[in-house]
Image (tube, rainbow, N blue to C red; front, side, top):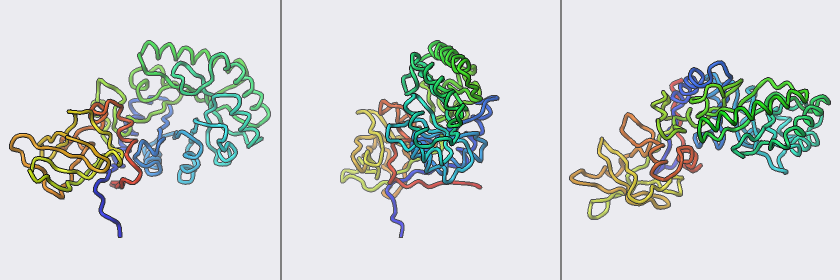
Length: 357
């Protein structure tokens, strides 16, 4: 018998499909669309969201490491699937057998790949560091990397299908400078004899605000989950709807009748707001958050408004029609970003997938 939860997350697959389709129309343009499903699709559930992304027209998927890629390959056997965060103990042989695309940031990664999977013609995307310093070969190491890759490609060990980078997204001016450094690196790779067909540098923010960075493919992440990467506009402002809504049950009232305990806390992945910040809503009435503990939070009433009844479910975020907070609101209260709010949701919190199909 399934135990009744004190909190749960509802995941709207129709909203996610609509967001992916909207991203394809508004952020990708003529470029291919890669959807990031890293970190269990930002806490939403990687397998279900990957399938929905494919159904909505995604051209490729991205995760962080090889283990995530292999797990996802079992249910998504055909879409290109990029993995790029590697260690010296990463299983490059298993990645090659699973036909994963590998992001490569250094010669040592190529050498391990060829040692573990020789003559398998593994698809790789060479990464240049253009300023963010999130992996990628430094400019002084780039010529050696591309020449080594060209030699391995000629021997049938790899195929260099892409060159890529991450933008810092600190300013449009800095991103344009990074784009120029990227184009310079591509020219060096071509001079070394490589002919990559997929150049990609833009994620959600750059794809929206700097269309010249879209190139051959855009990598879209948090925005298709209905959470904004921007400080000056919401996801809804851009036409994207929340995919996750999080709900907690009212467990009890205080003897004084001025506070209520809700069944979700930081042990469930709820990020505590800074002191004096944060609220929940019930039937249009806002209740300030008093404290967040490991397994519960406490709200209090103001004025003459009665507390929500024991047993009632309260939406903590993700239901704009119900006037609940947004994930971005929780991010602001906790002094973080919306990605962390949704991705921090603990694995033991049940996900209820809603699908109209």
